[in-house]
Image (tube, one colour):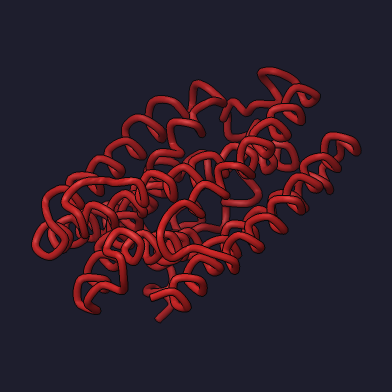
Length: 287
């Protein structure tokens, strides 16, 4: 059981929850109603497996820097709980299962998007950009926001408005989320040799960037109200959560301390979960 738990930890399961909560609304909206259970399960499972593979590859490739960071040194690979080669085989197996399942059930467009997301996350983000620039998070945001695109493609054979609008929410949400952790974990990332935004442009400019991205995020979260099935529940939730997010971002800019950065980071997790939960509730009431 302990080995199973360690392998599960490689996949970063908390991140996988985002796949379920962002992929399901896209399936419903794109299809104009609830899809068949088989298609929904296969699409969400396939997306989760490919995301788990990408996270496992990231854990494998960053095992040495992870050993230098307080927040990551207890992960399975840097701690020695698992050996690198079996972890790599595990990631390859997950990726093959995920892409294969999507190809067979959800279609080649969905499978191709999933494979592209893994490639971007591993080769462009993890290997190329992350060790070199703090702006890697913007490119990495493509992979982190891919679930709605895969879900939409599974229904329509291509990506439509539903997929792109839900993708945009996660994409714009990621910079303030990650820049916040860069502030209160600044020394941790410095030990690992990762260039972070506060080190390149300064803390004051980082506070401004977080606020700008937060201001941009709120109207983006309201755009899905033009999609069928989203009405009062989502509209009220998005407005209230958006106001709270802006308040946290403004407080961080005013107080300029690690504690405020940590509060914004933690709230951003609840924020995104709240948005997609409200979508699911609204769709359940509409269809």
